Image 1 (cartoon, helix red, strand yellow):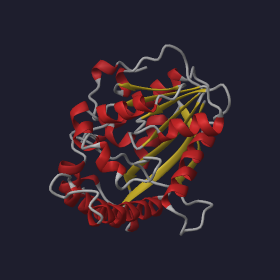
Image 2 (cartoon, one colour):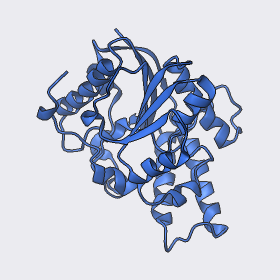
Image 3 (cartoon, helix red, strand yellow):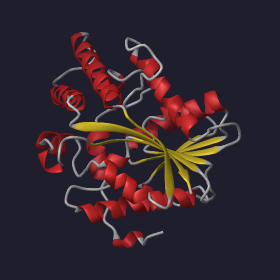
Length: 288
């Protein structure tokens, strides 16, 4: 592996908590019951299928991508509120699911679930040292935080390569990786909206598909690549509707919660995905 001390990383604890630690009650008011804060998946489902069903489809897709099964040990990098880990144990018989997060509120939420076989650790991926190998790794919605906007292309790819090298090491060179990330589409990095960059996801930078291909080369082979940007547009639109409903019903108080900011961000994101300015990549990797 590359010496991590020579690299600079995005996704600081402060940057992550700026977005994710605004209150579990706030997110639970407009996310689906799985508390999944990433794009749902309508592949194989009717387009009018409810959000929760499409989120369950997405969770199953990633579990299937790493070949999850009884007795296995799976790492979830950027585990959110534990929806993926619950699916792995409940539906696939996985023996142990370990999650990494930098959000104190997400960590507390998972701890309160009290589910044997599920654990979460507050750690950056680049500081994490597992005590034994995993059979597979899933990372949904975390890759966007690994680099930062001040890095040039070479520096950004060095960080991504460090991640792929770590995943290969953590699976003893024979595991699988299922990755889901927003990426630049038709939009150039310099055209990124400053509201999103500064107010919503500070110190974060999206990858390009080329970044991922170059950084993973020789470590993992790409077995399946999907761009499901329209799925994310629909997800953001449904979240936006649920957020408005939560305000109308009195469940959320705009004076106490960042309703206006998140409403704007969700509408802008939906438009960006529909215009293909940004993409939603789902990539299944297997180690060489």
